[in-house]
Length: 147
Image (cartoon, rainbow, N blue to C red):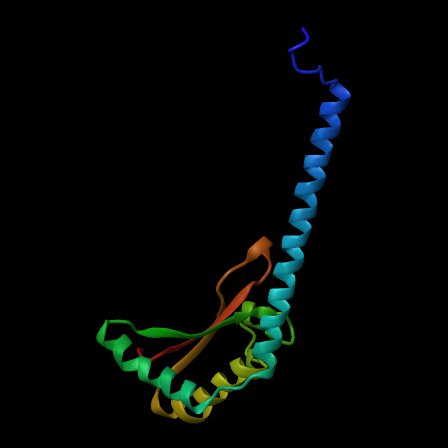
């Protein structure tokens, strides 16, 4: 019996399990906080940056290669719906005034379409592309050229 490991009480095991659960809870909270920070930084970046001339040319250059692949539309931008002033609700509800909720780079893409691409027959659609937890997540702007 002298070489046997010391006996552990049930209370010791419960304490060990509680510590493990506490650690997992802390790690989950830290991961959630980090994800929120990343999300908030991304929202801020989309709201405060604007479309460069190079980005405009890049968007337009993708149309022809997509058409050659048989595609009828491309997603030109994916962004957190929180970039919209209403959290993406107008897009989700197909409200005709959804463009008014756009800010920053997504708004610039809308303006590019409205001023330059729409007169050439291109169409623009916005839709929510994912629903984490049942609420609007990311939104996407799609430009199409087919009827």
